[in-house]
Length: 155
Image (cartoon, rainbow, N blue to C red; front, top):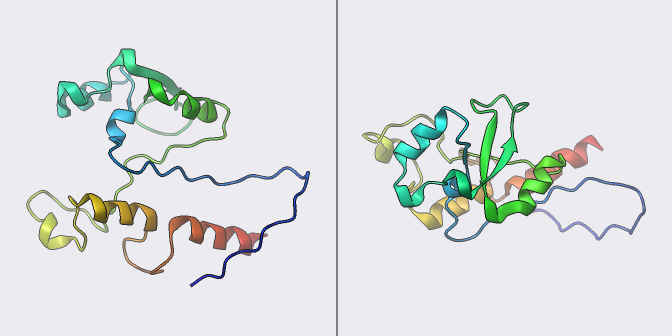
């Protein structure tokens, strides 16, 4: 278990911070961020979702992802998340999408036998999203704690 860090002395020196926004509850990530309608993958997204679960073009804010090496150069962000769009456009924000807990490739026929977690348990997946440690290599630590450890070793 990690000892809590002492509070830093206030400074006028510029710094960068990692802020992890964990949207607790019923946020449907595919209704928050999706391929933009200008991307060919939008039709695939729309076909896979119910009409009520699709992020429609008139509900989208455009995100330019042309430098991200993604299949789409443009993504759609839900129109109520304009603060996230501003952070992204300024280069101060990033989205980690399609980030799941699988430790290996599975199919709908073998996932139950091949996975160690309950993939359809909201509670279990909330915990896994906070750990991001599918192989339990650093049990008891969260993703931000491990990032902090790395950053402290490099400074």
